[in-house]
Image 1 (tube, helix red, strand yellow):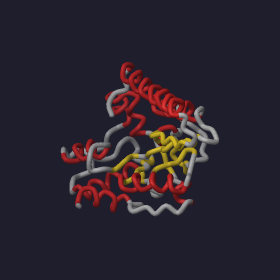
Image 2 (cartoon, rainbow, N blue to C red; image 1 turned 90 degrees about the vertical axis):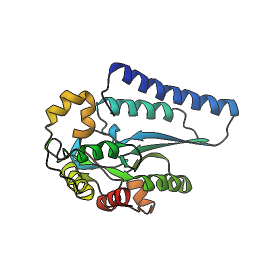
Image 3 (spheres, rainbow, N blue to C red; image 1 turned 60 degrees about the vertical axis):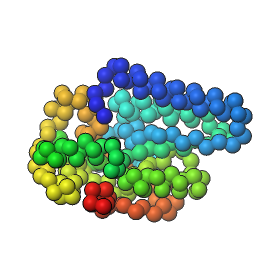
Image 4 (cartoon, rainbow, N blue to C red; image 1 turned 120 degrees about the vertical axis):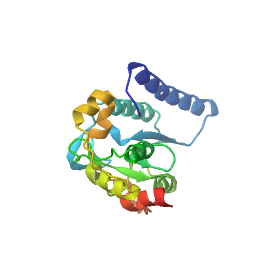
Length: 227
């Protein structure tokens, strides 16, 4: 979270490049015959799309910093792919967890009574409960699934729907409207992460019979905040 300053962008890109370099070095040093590399990427790689459902087969990528960073990371990792080395590019949605992540910021905003619609509110937010995230990774390894894999609930919500449900679960108002241009002024390029739309379908998980514990947003949020 936070502003994408020039210094922060460099640090993020350097950390990704360094991770790929170290991975390659470990494989070479230990002469690993068979390896599985799991890469933590995100759905920010996809293009802003208000209408269409986005699956792993979708090829349109975005031009934001997050998208370009994810594209570069996956490209560098895919260069290591071979018969012995399999790459799994995990593309995470908004992770819902009790500890840290987007919900910690959203909860603060709602507790201050300033939660609500962002921009039009029609943009799609694709999310995943932390338990489903963990279980999906185990499932992916057991089922030997490879390539880019969307790690999201099968039921994304529009931002205004997300705001309404979160407000009800927290028993806080969700009436404040935040114009998109205000976010662009305050957050700069990072605002695209809140304003852009990504209606994601985790087709590979669904087609491999992964069982989601929390496919419904209300159930996921109630588990996190009311347990």
